[in-house]
Length: 370
Image (cartoon, rainbow, N blue to C red):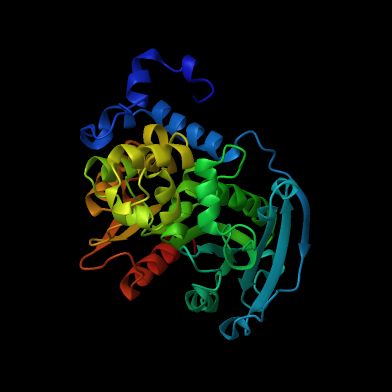
């Protein structure tokens, strides 16, 4: 339950709670209730509560820190800062340690000049250096960039608990308070935004990331309007569409341990829609009912939103992505900003970052951040 649900208009309650039984037929374009501004606000509130979980977004410490490994050579011609935050989560988890990197042109931000800013997020199994070549090119063109290791990745790896094991525990162990698949990464990035908004050299903020980074980019933009121009890459998806059309297997294979633990026989090829829905409801409370893409993308309006995907992406079935963007388009057009929403689905591309995708995102940031 989401707090305040009982006070929500009774005429819309049934629309805010789609039938939880799977597989079912999806409401056509989810359009009936998605048009309501109040419903969009409710989707955002549901996501906020799933992310926050009554935690205090305080920082125990923020300090500059030497980096544990050499600065990539392509960044050495720029100004590079390494920072670390200790959040309240540090009391019970190694993931309360939150390092991040800021890169800007030499002398950038002098005399109070604010720089267009892009947060860049990596995919599963990578680290903050994954996009370093792209990052360097953005800084060459006058951008300030921010990168970090997402939970249980890179410098935040935990010798006792791997990323996959942490996700499994968040499903199977009630005493494990973390939500490492997406939600806690959104929480961490809100701490980073708290820091960025107080820097005199940070201007409008965009965000992009591939796969895991794309999903986090989407959800952060929904829940925090300090992100002005998100461009999630191979991340926006309709979890509900995938379940109802039996197209969830490639997404499940990206975090196999939790699905192996949830399956009665431990065999991933035997996953059912009902089992997959149960896992998503545990890892991402409220997602299927309240803040899946078709229900939440409209919350980003009137801010600019570019959704980038591949037409052959098995983790993010393109038809589900299109239906989600169509649902969001209602909100954008109702606010008179239809030109601020774009979908770029590259033909013959899969779950990948192509040069054309990168150029499309670069042009988006040039258009809306500079």
